[in-house]
Length: 191
Length: 191
DNA sequence: TACGTGGCCGGACAAATGTCCTTTATGGTA
DNA sequence: TACCATAAAGGACATTTGTCCGGCCACGTA
Image (cartoon, rainbow over all chains, first blue to last red; front, side, top):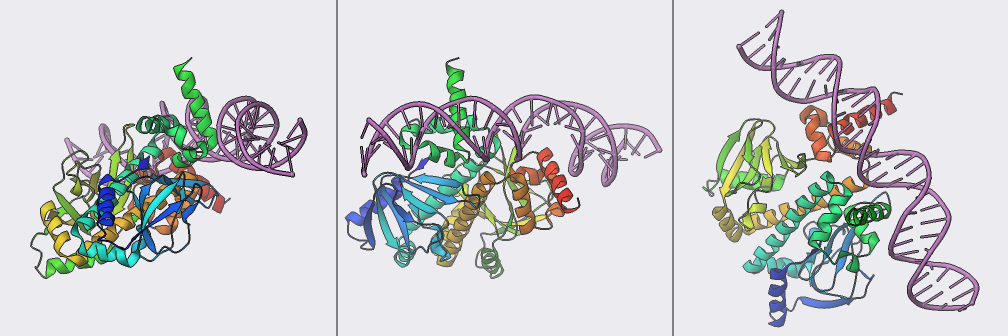
């Protein structure tokens, strides 16, 4: 649910600490602030230093669909990197957030000259792919109760950290359906 | 719906033709033959030369969920590349299929020594990511009729090439629901 | 205190989708 | 030809999920 990337995080941290990569700058965001906005041009790649953001897009039906929550070490803005496109989603801070920011051109240079970084980046992409594939197939083939159970298993502190509406948007369901399911499940435990 | 990758295809074709990459071997498959099987170890990366395959996985509910259809230039087996893992999906030929196959170790060497190839690979991953993200959010926020309309728009020859069951598995719905929707839509046109 | 505002909860009903089962082609094969 | 497997189509019903709505509660502010 909250995606992280330890390896990338520690590698970037070392890069920054050693001062060998002056191209990284650090930025802070308060809850509800938006780091990227759907439809706007993206000029940098971002890597999470601390906090949690949600990555979502607004569909033509008006509802929000949450792609992922990002925590320590996850990167975003990379999809818009290659084709100079507009951001296909919005990134919004959930709590206090710190990110490393690196300009496209610097990022591409790093990718070319730093083999280790290149490999870590590829692994990050592959990890995202795998995650998305699994999630989509699970979502399409299970009822809400199963999805919720799975989510709670993987992320027990769920309801303390993420709002109900966000959980619903993440599961691709309505708030009503989420509440209904929570009720049903609690009744199954205490009949 | 049927994913392709022109740039990668022509680059690989040139590599193979120029003989500079002896590590590629060519393989043929007949319809229904399986190139990768879910749960089995993967030792190579594959790139489609011709034909169409379906990439699907069987969920714990017994239904099949089709991740993507691959055509010319698309690659698969790359997810299993980095973490030495088992295949998370099955790749099955739909018509006559030819693929280029390259061993993991050769692939990794190529990735390290061929900058252009490295970049094409990253772009391929990013393209898949973007596609998956869009598809999942669309699927979760629209009714079947919308999904089907969108699919037909993007891929008009749909029903001639892909079986009804496969279309249903791709949309994450039952065959019954697909038939019902097709009927409804045809009645809307000829009332 | 009184009054909004927003998050959370749930009733009642409608719409979408799944399940189960039967029928009708269609193609291959004994 | 007769037989069998398999794709396609759809009827009848159950389940799941969405829509619309009103109520409750906590919190900030006039």
